[in-house]
Image (tube, rainbow, N blue to C red; front, side):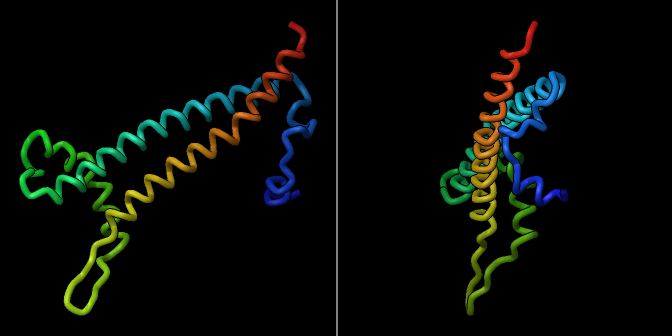
Length: 140
């Protein structure tokens, strides 16, 4: 059985995952750590998304100078991320002007990260519940 068949035929009720006590505890441990990592990364990405939105807002407001304190911290923290996306996506050129869409795509990348982290957590919750059920059936 190759990897594609394994993931296509993945069934949580399959007895191969719950053959012995070690595999159940190991699966419980891995799913707990993965859910916690996904939750912490979700919080970090959401906070960074707020920083990116703030940076883009400050660039559009003419009365706020983004290069002086306290607004410069937003620029310092988000500049590498926006620079990465501006190198990956060049400006869209029209006849007389050009449009930079890399900031919008960068924010959508953060939105996609939050979506996939939530999906990962929702996929791991049934694994956690199933392993808890098996752990409660083991003799002490």
